[in-house]
Length: 424
Ligand SMILES: Cc1ncc(COP(=O)(O)O)c(C=O)c1O
Image 1 (cartoon, rainbow, N blue to C red):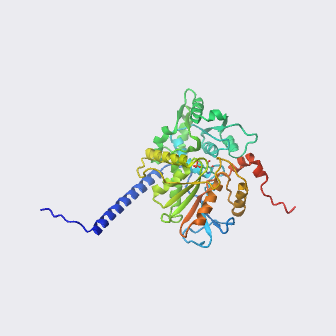
Image 2 (cartoon, helix red, strand yellow):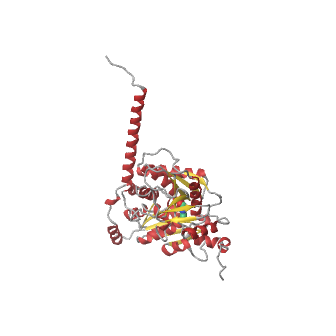
């Protein structure tokens, strides 16, 4: 005879709770193991390390920079503050977020014996300059298609693209069809004997998580120089907004989440400026992969919220497909926030250059009016509202050389920048 009995509901609850916890912890373990494997690869940056500073703001616009903050003792209960991840200091010429987005890509070029890279961007593109510098460091030839006309005086990222790479200016009408433009240019570089690769062609290598077993760089260089001189051209999309770009950002968050730094337990609000939104999605994905309670606030600079949500969905679905990542459903990992004073992408408004100057003079940190000022202002706002215990972290994406191009374009704002001329 079978005995039938019912467990008291509290016992059922305990059982289902413990089952739930067990499933959750297995899921977490699975995710962590997956992430470890994913990050076990060759990188461009020798280490993910970056400096973390703390900005203390007392009343509105008075700032104080602490370059040796404590992450565990909240010594500044009276004043408002946020942490700043100083990725602007990673490289003198390569933007912080470009260094992260290209961190996993460059070793793949070696892995696939790529000889040339073709990419495109605006006249003052930080992306093309980053590609040019990083490729030149590795003996890879870069071909940079820049939108519009050559400026009379070369400066900033435009000058760096020209110094390190092969620049071609493309009429706006031709540039409007980017894919066609990149394709025909890459074909012309390849000639009859070379071959053209797109990101989809090298993703196989990117998803082979253990790239450490691939031949090392020296061997690759030798084989290239001894090879048949056939050119292998890789086309990199504008802004390098492919799934492989997310890996470098995940690597950064893994570094930051170490116990002696931001840790894995305390809630953090990460703030970042969003152009294509790739860096922001990388941060959100990183929090998910690493199981840390970090939220991402991305200031929308170039588009409307629907476009950013679409971009988020696209990147997540590519990431799932390319790296067999099964631990995420749908999107919604980034809080997309409106800029304080919305405007057409790239525009500077009155008073912003002075705001950047004020920050620079008080802290030694340079923010630019297009990208990083927007993130700075959002971090100020969030940290002003933050109740005790919550922490705000600004990812400083760099963009220093962008100021030179802006100064050329916005003479009226940069021409009348405040000068202290009372002493003469
Ligand atoms: C300084 C700076 N911050 C942010 C971005 C945008 O990054 P993402 O396209 O990953 O959103 C850029 C892009 O050029 C940039 O130069």
